[in-house]
Image (cartoon, rainbow over all chains, first blue to last red; front, top):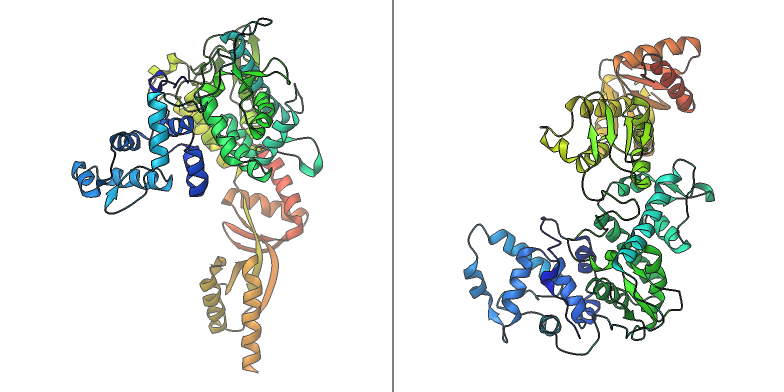
Length: 470
Length: 64
């Protein structure tokens, strides 16, 4: 068995917030996690998703045969390090990697054995996938071909989402993908009509590909539970994929029933490639092998039009004009959500941010901040010399347009007026204030406006009062 | 005392003046509270918002 080399890929988690998957794992039962930890590939993948300090702690404890006193570990921690250390211990104990104990610290024995195995490369469990033997009839697909396939699949999904708002429908992703998009709340079909992108769907489009991929996979995991699929099998297959080698063929023979069923779904997402559905071998794509690493999940070099995935390509001028150096239809479609396109050249589109285009975006549920953050992340390297990055006039104007949309706020409720006396008024108002339902009040006019929710209570209160007076 | 069902609109004073002018054509205001608040009939809200949008749109100019 070939153990994947952890140094081959970079860290995925240099930022402070824990990975989305770790949050999901923390909510799982100890039993599920223990079964998951039997697979060396799962342990290695989870280890790679952990934060730097968590990994440091695990590494320190990994090769110890017996538990060490918690006080020994404490002695290493400086005063400033106390808080991050406690937080790390918290995460590790919720993941059941390092059971929390005030006296002795020792790694979960299952996790320890598996991670040791992953690093030293012992065992024949096949948890890192079983490479397929040579195939005389077909040649192994090249990395470029796999990249092109992954990119095409992934962009089909995003392109479908982005175009649904405009009424034009390009190539449709498979039924499984559509269901996933709908279940995750990224798209919705109002009154059973065609799928429409939702406000969170628009926000999703502006995320980085790695985040997008995991958001969909997390939703897939939630659905797996409902479909009576074994969560451990699903997770360990994803982890197996993430430790596989790009450009290598793997055999489907050792996969369990659940995992064979997953092949079809993962093919639709562009995570794996198969010659045909009945093929006994499969290739992971770059989307799969970067699941637990920080390497970009989509090829950055020119594939089928995907020229500038991670670099910036947008130049924004103070006169609201936008020059976007791209020929990628997906990126153009995303830009089209909030700019008015004017002209298009082989490698460049020119447009402008106008009141109409921003109003359209706002009506779709995109916020001004999201537009600004998208422009910031995708700004052209030339723009990076500007300080601030985006022209302030444009930023302010986008925010002003957002405010303009909210000039009138409406709240439904009841106006209470014509009180018999000032004492009456104050008495009822006091009660309404306790319920926290007063939206507006005026002592001079002796009336107040209460929200809809509070009405039943206030009416009851007044009725009791008048009944009591009689 | 009385309780009247309606919708409380919170707006700036410019919008408030437009609302008052609109009210002269077809009445929908239940109570004019102060510079920033009016109570209107609940079932008129959609129509009022449409008319108000159209009115505000007259004051903007587009490059197109």
